[in-house]
Length: 314
Image 1 (cartoon, one colour):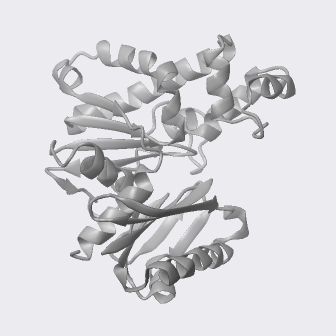
Image 2 (tube, helix red, strand yellow; image 1 turned 180 degrees about the vertical axis):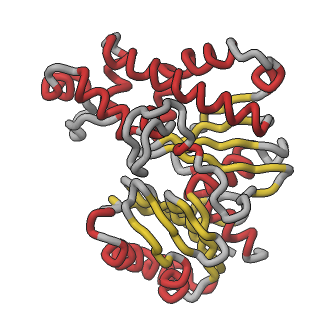
């Protein structure tokens, strides 16, 4: 039996077909194009889902969806996504109509947490905190071996923890959020302020055929010894460390798993993060926690497919 996983992020949407053992049979991805609105997005998604149904037929039993934002998992509804700019969006109902399959909808970080717990940690540790580092910042919680939702399904909105009173503007409309210091849009905003000649910077450090300012470009610059890029990453690590320190004191997890595109620059921000941990007054949670940077760039979509299969009882 196979399950479809869908990971809807502010920049890209990924789809995969997996079996319960985590073997991937097919993958697709496309630019989310959030500015066109949910209806256009669902139309594009439907085309890929139709192709999946045609290819795998009755082997498909479920769809698991992770989407960036505040999700009502019981109703399959996206209540609000700051980075997508969508509100009150039905997610499970249209996907059920498209596929005829049971559909389970969660916050994208929850699905990354489930992927980390099942695929990378083998369901071993009972308490796992997964942090998604992408356009925005999210968190998924596995507590005592189960996905933790909180009272309204909103648990894990770590990106909107306030780390600086009256600080930088966040896409949610607030100020001083962790995301406003560690999300990719925040890092690039800082780069545009601090780098005098962006065109020359991009020309020097961008990846061929991707000539634009992005976190890959910023990472490559830091690799090459560019001090401005290195400082931006170090400051990001300090901010992430302060946010994570509060979460560790509250949750005391066995593992923290970092995933998402920004996590690929871990070599540049982890020293500053660990420095924050070293100066904490209550030492035990910081000495015992294990921090893992995931090598699986598709942890969210894999986790969504596996979660859907498990919820469907397959």
